[in-house]
Length: 191
Image (cartoon, rainbow, N blue to C red; front, side, top):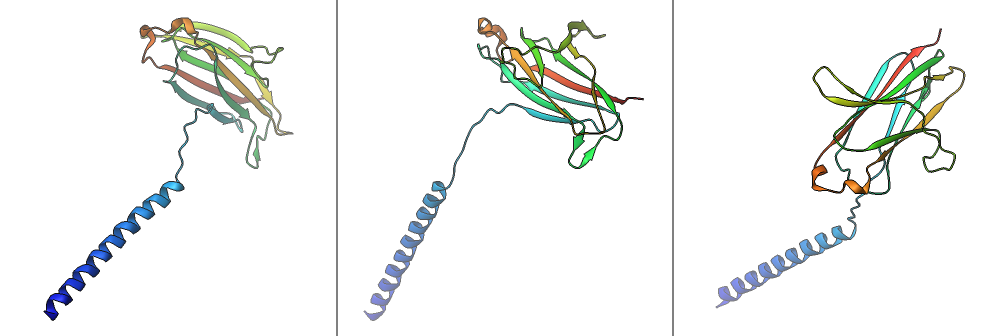
């Protein structure tokens, strides 16, 4: 009888211990969930090009989440003659070109050091033409005037690429189509 009571006590202690462990696990998972947070954001793409010496820099963007709407899509990037404590050691000039696919019926505007929706904002596109490469693929090429940086002071030009995809194209014909953009900065020393 005494052994039966001891076995019962052990079983009860074991059940209480299991119950306490389950309770602790539940409480721990509950407290972790209090401190967990999630956010979905759609920030503008911010890219920085550093023109410190003569070179060629390029970056590709895939616009895979475009859908027709009245508000334009804004992509911001900068070109600078400094990076951290380094500055270009000679006067430099650079040429900016933007090459896009022609998969979607969209238009582009490009602004330098101004907000696109200011009343006096002016697009700085020098050329905007569609060309065909040797494989028969069509691309849009946008160029700007040549810009220059001095080695005497820190300089940065901030660009806004404004993409218009009008609401009138909200049809199944343009579903799941990706538009590609290549931004190229080609710099050289001024002699």
